[in-house]
Length: 554
Ligand code: PEP
Ligand code: MG
Image: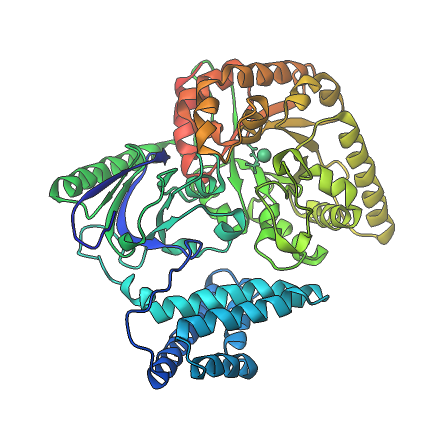
C-alpha cells in the first residue's frame, strides 16, 4: 500500500503497554534504503548533490555529537566525532568523486566506495580498525538519506498544537536489535512500531522501560508512510496513519484519562508496598544503566532488581575496562543511596550479540553460548566484571546475580571465582563488601527443577519470565508466530515458579522475585503472590501501577 495520499489507514499489531502517542513516523535505517534514479545523470549535478549531502551529514553529526555530549557524556558522544572524521577522509572522498566522474550517480558512487572500504576495514587484524567497518555502513546510510532528502522531510511535519512534540518520532523498523536500541537518542522517541518482534523482544522491553507505547509484529509497512502523522495505540493494538478527526478526538480523550490515572498514582509514592492482607513486598526497578535510575527513584522504586549489565557492552565498540565498569556500578550504587542494587553479570549471546565478542555463528543461539556459559569460559572477561562489581560494592548495597543458570556447578564455580577475586582485592588493599549477596536468574526449567539444590547455595532467585517462558514452552521469545503459545500457556511456568518459591522459602532470609516482563502485567500479580513471590522488579513507568495492584491483592 502506498501512503502518498492522505487516506486514513489502520494497521494492526500487538501492543506493548497501554500507552498512546501521536507524532511523525520515522522509518529507521535498518529498513534498507532503496535507491532509484528519476533524473538524468550529469557529472556536475551529481558532484553538487554529493557535496550538499556531505555538508548536511557533517552538520547532522556535529549536532548529534553536541547533544550526546550534553546528555550521555564524552564516551558516548565520541562515535559521532569519529564518523565526522571518517566523512572528511581525503582518500575516501577522492574515490567517491572518481566514481561519479566515471559515470555513476552519487548514490551508487557512495554505495560502491563504502562497500570497498568496509571490506578493507573488516579484514584488518587490529580489533579497533575492523570494528570501524560497521561505522562505514552507518556513514553510507547517513549520506544516502541526505541524498534522498529523507532527513528533511521527516522534520516538522506535525506540531499543530494538539499535544505532540514536533521533534519526537514514532520509530518504524523491521525490528530493533538490543545494540540498536541502546544507541538510540531516547529523548526523541514517542513510540515504536516494528514489522516483526514480540512482546518480549528488546524493542518491547525498551518501550516499557521508557513508558512509551509500542506496536510489534505489524507486518511490513510501506516506506511511503515515512514522515506521515500517525497515532500509535498500544492498548487497542493499532497504528492509525493520517488519522481522521474521530481518531484524533479518541486520542485526546485517552490522553486525558492517562494524565488522570498518572495523577491518581502519585499518592502511592512513599507508601509501603504491602498487600491487602498485610504481606510486605519488595518493589524494585529494572534498569539498563545510570540514565534509568532517576525514573526508578521518582516512581518510588525501593531498589534495583535487575541491572542488565550487558548494556554497558552493547553500547560500545570494544570491551569496557574494569575502570569504566567500576565507575558505572559505583555511580548507580551511590545514587541509590544504600538501597539494594542487583547487578546481573553479563548476559550476552543469543539475541544480544555484539561484534567485538566474535561469538561463533550458531544454529540455535538461544540454546547456545550465552550468559554465564560465556563468562565461565572467558575468565578474563568475567574477572574484569567481577572485580568492577566487587570494588563498587564498597559504595552501596550491591548484590550480584548470574544469568542463564542450569546447574549448581555453575554457581559453585562462579562463587569460587568470586572468592579468588575478593582475596586478590583484599591483598591489594582495595575496599569491597565481603558479605555481598549472590543470586541467580531463574530462567531455565532446569534451574527451577534443581531449585532445592540451588536454594542451598544462593541468596535469592529472580525469575526471568521472558526466558523461562521461551525455554519451558519451547517458543522463541522473538518469534511472533509462537507468541500466543507463551501468553496462553502460563500454567507450567507458574508451577515452576511455585516449586522454586517453596524451595527458597525453606531458608528464612532468602527470597524469590520476578524481573521478567510478566512482572509488570497486573492481571498476573495475584497469581505471582499466590506462588509466594517476595519481590517485583519492573521498568520505572510500571512501579506505581504494580504498587497499587499489590495493595489490592491478598
Ligand atoms: C528474562 O529473561 O525474563 C530477563 C529478565 O532477562 P532478559 O530479558 O534480559 O533476557
Ligand atoms: Mg533472560
